[in-house]
Length: 621
Ligand code: PLP
Image 1 (cartoon, rainbow, N blue to C red):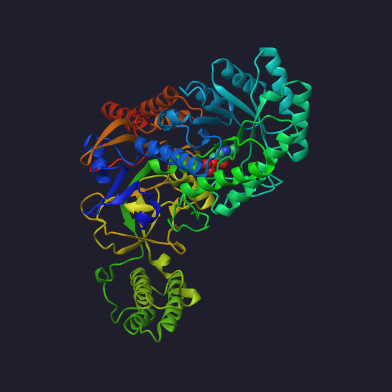
Image 2 (cartoon, protein in one colour; image 1 turned 30 degrees about the vertical axis):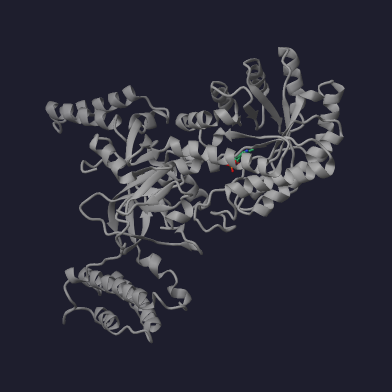
């Protein structure tokens, strides 16, 4: 499962073969024990485990990486991060970042009015920045300006030129001096799935001409001191460190150019993009990154300093808007395996072919008995042809249901035998490449892909998936994962691999004890992008602190959304639903279909489900 490669030291496999969270020196706790405690308390799964200590650790790690680079290179200014809350607006996440970041004056970034309203209410270090990005109307601008009167270091970033006049007008009306940033469209682009966020065609930002017009305009207004920040962003999850360096060089040259034009900028904001190594391969593959947080910080500090020296301009405060890298590690989705289905395995349970069996079944039995390394390709092609014939004959009424069952089981047995035979072969014919996937079992897990891992569905994002225990036991079943939505897209059939993407995951044969899978690194974007497909709602979550001695404490358990809330979000009202059921039940009583007693029971059950969890609830957990 590659745990040491992707975990960044925040998770490990214990000697007992259990996944443990390791949020700090000497701190470790097995995830299975946490889940068992949740189940013992009578709570239902799935659940997201959140570890605020991991967020705090990530905030420290990023800030220390910049501090170390700054002192190593003798950089003449400091670093300040801002957390873009769109990555995860959950209260526990924002408050954990703000608390851990307080001493570093780590700030927040808002991209909408609602996000700004949320950010303004947070306790922040007086120097911490509150950056307002995104397109803005007058209401957004006013709220941001009021923020300055609350003593907050609010910077309004101009994303398009026309916003400047709006800001000046509102600032005059309120009598508040604004702090303004400008987003510049770098011609440099990121690498990976979000590379279109940068480049000349980017959705946000000003071009070089507009940038100079902003400087001129503010000069005319005698407000040049209001222009404090140059902002750039070339996309999230930048996989290649060279792209970061190229973009930061261009950004710093732009900063120097603006200083030369008379601006007095204080901050250079390099945006987001710091990656997360989801597959642990340390490559430029889209689910990975070829650099560490330390290298990221060092390369940015070095590049900014180099350009500033050459251009003889003051070294600015360096800002980054890292979001993914701060929050991805803190959350683990726990998915119980509720069933396993797959190609028929139980040949023994089926009656063997006999005299009465159709010839095609006998032929398939022959193929199964004679597969060798020399003839497996021919056997495969014969079996495919025979299966097709079997189905055609069945449609015409010449093959019985029992023979069809036997034939299908034989076909699967042939594929399994071939897969085993060729598992170590270097060359595999094209038609057999997908054999593992075809033969894989489907592990049905109690979760919704669309609610909990939307990026896996939308953009093929990869997340490490690992059983919570039995990790010192050889797993034996090749599996894909399916969720409980009524949507055949609700499946995971791409898994991390150091060299490639795997189409199956090796899992253990589930036994008597519940078997739980953990999906890791899902704390960035997934919580907020999820959708209520099939009315599966927000998942329950447990906020857990790890204590010394392998102990842990569940600080807070937040139950997932109830069915009633999901239904009401679609415009229905609970009393309306209950009345409709009652009316129908009354009619059924009149029709003699239902008794009064049954009606009461029905209404109780209906009410209980309205108040219940939207996911499957089994008593055994
Ligand atoms: N800043 C801006 C302007 C963004 O658009 C984004 C997201 O794409 C971020 C910051 C956060 O990026 P990341 O999560 O890669 O750090």
